[in-house]
Image (cartoon, rainbow, N blue to C red; front, side, top):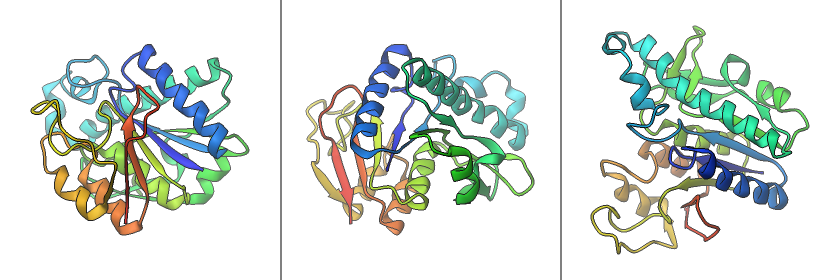
Length: 242
């Protein structure tokens, strides 16, 4: 079993999501069971991105609870669309979200930590090969949605990877893997074929890290193997392990 996490660019439109579904089909053939974690669709300026949702009203900024509910809608919508498009392609799946999922949050709104209860997740997933999960969020003991901070869908994928005993967590991005420098600054930046966690962490101190640093720290602590790759092709990306 593996975890596949699809970022905002991979989820942006029906064309990019077809590429995601090709990766999901391959994962089912090779690994049997697959858990899919999705980010909100697109980036700032796209209609359903997190930034766009939070820009609907300035009043959201004065209510951390309301802000987290609004922010979490992006991943919920993305997961619903991915689940439906998989069904349309003949891939049965279970959409797992909210308080029934066993994905729990602890801590403040906007920067909560994640933990997981396995029994509810497995009960809902049942015998299907594919589960689709909205990233970036969980439910607190008070029943309220809390999000895990920018890039938090990456953390969701890693936590699920540890708790479900996944062989690998695959991150599908709009870059070929982990690069030595930001490709927006240096288009010829070299891709690393493999890295240790210790080598990866210093590369995440940029404005737009290839994965969330909080997720990378969790992966290092829990020894969760990662594969960071491009959603648009079948080429291997960068493998990260101890």
